[in-house]
Structures are given as C-alpha cells and as structure tokens.
Amino acid sequence: MKTRFFNASYPIKGIFCSNNSRLLGEIVCSSTLLLLLFCSVLSADVPMSDAELLPGKEVRITAPKTGKTFLVYVPVDYTNKRPFPVLFYYHGYRGTATTGMFRHITKGEGFIIVGMNYATDDYYKGHLPPTKTAPEKAFFNEVMVLVSARLNIATDYIFMGGYSQGGYSTTVLGEQLLDRLAGFLILGAGRRNVDTEPPPAELIRGHPIFYGAGELDDPHYSRAKRASGFYKAWGADVTFEGWENEMHSLSAQWSTKTKMREWLIAYGPMKQVASGFEKAQTAENVGKLGEAFTLYTQIAEILPDMESCRTAKKSAMRLAVKAETELEHLKDAFDKKPYAEVTKALTAFRDKYSNSIFAGRATQLLSELLNAKANALEARALAAETQKNYARALQLYELYLTYFPKAERYTTVQKRVKDLKHKIGAK
Image 1 (cartoon, rainbow, N blue to C red):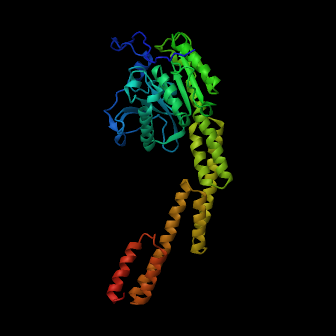
Image 2: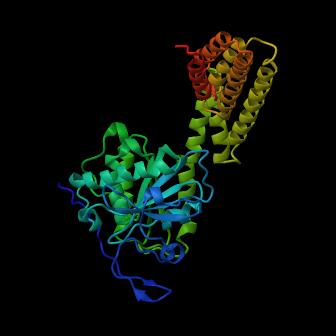
C-alpha cells in the first residue's frame, strides 16, 4: 500500500488581528496569541557585521551569500562568557520569519533564537520536496556561520522546530541535518513523508523529538500522533503533547498547557551542564586546571539553582584560590631565585592554567619580568656608554638584542646600537 504524502499547506479559516480587526487570510500557523504578544518593530535589514546584538533585542539580518533575511533574538541573560544553545524556528504557510513562539515559551531566557525564512518557493509554498533541500541547507549553514561569528553559541545544542508548515519543514530539513542538531520541536504538524524514507537508524536512535498539537486540530493532531509513533518505532526519544481544547489557531491560554520549556531545558542547558561538568572534572584530573576552571565557571552560570551548578561554582572558587596562591609564591620568588628558574616556573604555571584568566596573568608577569631584566641590562649598557667604554656598551647592547627580542624597548635599543656603531665607526 502506497502512503500518501501530507501537504503542509493545509488551509484553515482566517483569523483576525484584534488591534485592527483585519482579516489575515488563510494561513497555517496563525496564532492570535503570538501576533498580539510578539509583533515587534524591527530595524531595516542590516548585514551581520553591522547588527547591534544586545540582550533582550531582536534584529533582522540579511545573509550576504543567499540574499535571504532571518531574525536573531538575543536572550535577556546573554553573556559572551559562556556558550548558549540555539533554537531555529521555521514559520508557517506563507508567513514570514518570526521568533515569537519560542521567545514566549523560553520567557526570553537561556536560548538564542533564530527565525528563519525559506530560501526557495518550493519551501515557502509548502511543497517541501526532500530532494530540493540544497538551498535551504546552504541558508541554514550560512546563518550558523554568521551567528557563531558574533555570539557565543553551544554548537552541540542546536535545535530546530516550527509550527504547522514549519513543523513539516523540520521533518525534512532536520532529518537531513540530524548529525548537527540536538533535537526537533515539531508543532501542529505530522511528518512530510509519513512512514516512508525513515532517517538513518544510527542518527535517529535516541534523538530527542518534541511533538505537540491541539487535540481539536483536524487533521494535524492525528498526523502528529501518528508521526510521533513512527519516530518512536525508529528509536527516537519522543515526547508527545496533546493540547486540550486547542485548534490549529492557538488560543491565548495555549502556553499554559505545554511543558515545552521544561523539555528544552532538560535537553539543552541541563545536558550542557552534565556534559560540561564531566569535561571539567576530566580536565582537573589530568592537571589542565585552567580548562577546568573555565568550564566550572561557565557551568555555574547556566542554571544557578541546580545542584551541579552550585558544585561547579565551588570548584571554580577552589581552583581560583589555588591559582592565586601559586601566583603569589611565584611573585615572591622574583628577587630570590635566578631569572631562568622563575621564568621556567611561570611558563609551567601558564601552561597548567591555559584557557583561563590565570594564564593571562602569568603571561603578563612573564612580560614584566622579562622587561625588568632587559631594562637592567640596558641601564648597564647606557652607563658604559656614558663612561665612553663603547666596546663594553656595544657588548651589552648585543646581549640585549640576543636574549630579549620580545622586550618592549627592543626596537629602541636596536636603533641605539646602530647609532652608536655609526658614531664610533664600528661595523
């Protein structure tokens, strides 16, 4: 028996926007709630390099290669000190890029949200041919590069989802990008290919998928229920929600009926914390204390009330105290131990605490120590030159140039040697 493919552009009756009572027309993924709460005034399209990406703000960007636009919402708690998971949202039939639904669900926190347009008419009009995804994937790849160049993203925690046609699109594009995604959110939709052409078994097995649809949404609820069963049979980690008394056009109460935010936190930040904590412990156990400190510090800020995050904060503080103590001992050794011995110890400290603020501190101390040593040698050379002991002065200057090529005054001393040689007629 041949399975009939579902058409994503299934029409529903029009809805009205309450602020002007204007008929919006037959579109899939129309939600009065989202239109009222998340219509935002966007600036004119700008290139990514000129975009002002600030916490709590949304910007519309033009991708230079594909020429398509997309939206970037930066969460209110964003900081570049740690990587943030990313949600890609695909809009409904004949709609435009939006971040509204995911912004509402996440409360604007914890996730960078990217609202995607479609790259081709085949996808904009809801045909969704699986053999014509190349332009869509190229646009996705370009957006990933642009966003990651400006924001600190957690590349292991990229999610894709959408409502209605956006949900069906996710079952096509998402399946072809399985190895790059941490999960799907398929909302108000089934699966484009129904039960045919299943995704690669090794990639779909254990893959997190969230399905949600209104229980009165005919025919999408039954399609969603059926598709979730197929994914589960293929080994995916499926969560299904049926939203009571909800049709395809969602009510203002819809968001109180879903645990989508909890699902996102469980498969995003919570997994990010668990993975990061394990990596931090491994790094600490093998002596990579800088890497461990940085990981602990990042983890502590993800879900501050989570027990493992509190433990990570304590671990970061413990390593910070250890590093500060070691640095103080090294500083005390400056005037007590040979230069070579101190620089060797500082270099070892810097390597041990690489990828952390303490490595930078060690580098600064090494520079200060080197310049102090170089300046002392220069002072001896200047004294010899003042006494007109030019041979001795040149000897000391040459030692400076040989052993301190990274000293701050290297260029000045180099010129001094040239001038002195010219003065005394030396070659």
